[in-house]
Length: 331
Image 1 (cartoon, rainbow, N blue to C red):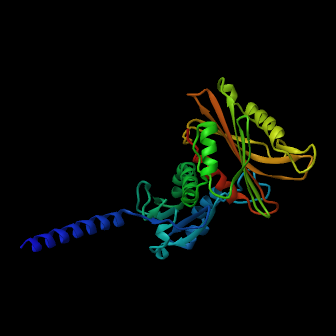
Image 2 (image 1 turned 180 degrees about the vertical axis):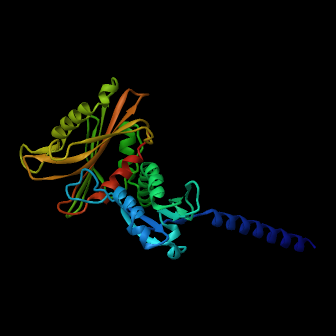
């Protein structure tokens, strides 16, 4: 009898464990699919893709990304019609669905994070005609781009997180009191006087992160003029070029720096700067993105710049990788 009771308890425990495992499996989303910086636009037919709707989506998302020396689109927009929207395509990371319903009185917007996969954002717009659809899309597109940018960073971070470089991250924690997910392959080239140069060198390309700390006095320290001036002074001092007297600086004529306030940066209020760097005295250049972040508790500014050198090759996705690393920064 005791053996039967023990056997019953074992069976009950196994059933409970299996039930919990099944629930966890049910709740776990599949990894989203799609190429880097790719958006899938689903329409009812080819006329919608070739007409106003497709044109509006392409014009916005396939704009040339600012700050790249060769033209590259911000996103690539792929297309299928609704009959082809199978289980695989439903897992696309960045999804827009367009639907025209002639009898519809008012447009309908439906959206969902992680609908069939993760990370994912799916947006469906229903309208009575193509013109109405485009008007609704125009009200959503800026926020939609921010979400898709976030999805791209999340995708890269899924790859970076398991291969974090503990030596680099510990040095940043010790020097600046920050955490940042820097993957293997990067190394510290210089770390002195609250200036750190982290590099990744390959045969045909070079990626780098420049980190430094400055006193924070007032909001004037976040002005465009101050940010450009302090960046130039730091790179001239610490980032030499390949020949004597050459050094890294910001291009302010061919591709002027552009600025954007990022109020929801993970580490707090930040100012983003994008543009082109060049080497004074040499024919070297490439894109960069930098963030100047306020640490109000310490009255300090943390400045982080990511740059790419990859002559005559696509650089957009490499710059996205550096953005991903920088966006992982927290105090």
